[in-house]
Image (cartoon, rainbow, N blue to C red; front, side):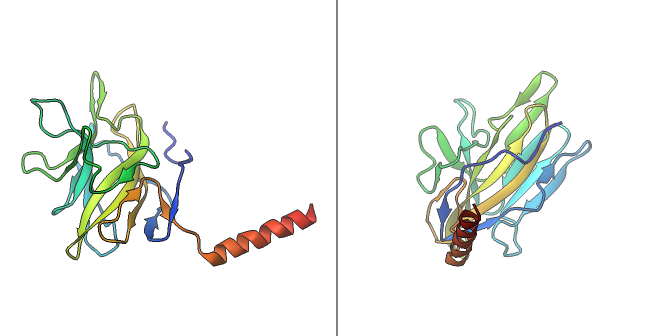
Amino acid sequence: MTTWLGFAQPSWSQGTISYFQPTSPILLHTEFFTELYPLDFDGDGIAELTFGYDFHFIGVRPEGFNRVLIVLSPPPNVGGPVMPLSAGFNIGADSGEGGLAWAARSSLDPFLTLVQSFDSGSGGAFVGQHAYMGVEFERAGNTYYGWVLLQISEFGAFGSIDAWAWDTRPGAPILAGAVPEPSSWTLLALGAVTLLFAKRK
């Protein structure tokens, strides 16, 4: 049994970030035929990504002109699996360098691999990872960058979407794991609680 949530992830605050964490992780698993989970990244009613999964595979399909960050497979192979990113990785226009690339959907194979399970074991760069996926998406003619926190089992096609975020400034990069800055009211409230606690001690 895999614990899907409960691993603390480092995070940074930025004031221009839109962030969403479901009340429970969105599970990507089925014992049967392919199921699809469309992810409306920015809440505009249009899915930017579609996750597809069945009993031996989990992948992601960027919709339209959207792209995700992959690690390039060595030639003569084309493309590659989705790259797991550590907290603090800079996701932006220049991220597709040094063996990485921004990849859109392909007419030959529209889903980019997170994990593929075989009798001999599981393949894919995300196997056994609780990490971030880099996302580039189009909105009203502008390009935006974001991340999705995913957990993928090392024991087969079991996964979850834990949270996602994007920077609301067109073209602005985002750090993997970055969340919105707490408001000044929240900071004041925290300060008041801390002072009250200190007085009681």
